[in-house]
Amino acid sequence: MRRTFSLGALALLLSGSALAPAMVTPALAVTQMAGEEDDNRKATVSGTEVAIREVDNLTPSLDVAPSPVLPQPIAPVPAQPSVVKVAKGQASWYGPGFYGNRTASGEVLRRGTLTAAHRTLPFGTRVRVTNLWNGRSAVVRINDRGPFHGNRVIDLAHGAASELGVTSSGVAQVKLEVLR
Image 1 (cartoon, rainbow, N blue to C red):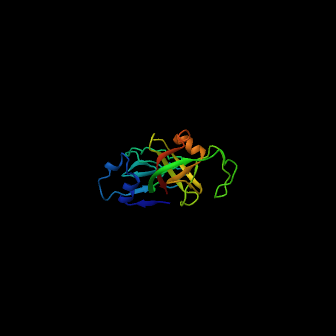
Image 2: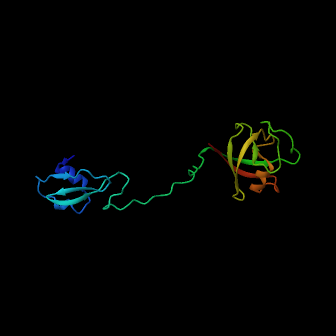
Image 3: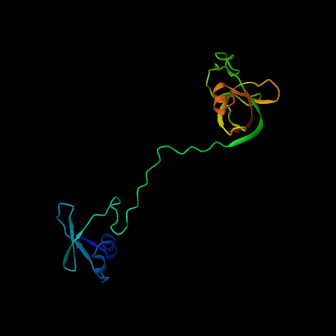
């Protein structure tokens, strides 16, 4: 069986090949040879036998440099939590006499936890507490109500107080940043 290709089809098949510049006559016809069993196809161009290669989308073009493959990140970079509200005031800490008791949220108070008590913030709210006297900070979770003494704004559990350096003095001036 014989197939006839137009000049445009031949140019498309041979694009990127060294034979493409040789085709200058518009009346040139290419006839594919029939009866071939393998993938190596041949055609005649003005009496000259030429190999026609199969072109697929997976084979990179010879005249284009391959683009570098960038590694995909294993996990997305976590975004910094946004600050919803800022307040300043005095903080105190509690712990030894209350270990084992339940907080207002129902959790058992344990030594070393990064939790705190606040009068109005909802349970589970994350708050970044910064000790203004030494610059240390910690993110705590609100799980209790208080403090109920003076003008204090937050009551820190033992772990948070240790990280902020409040355990020896008992109180400190702090900045509270409520996180989203």
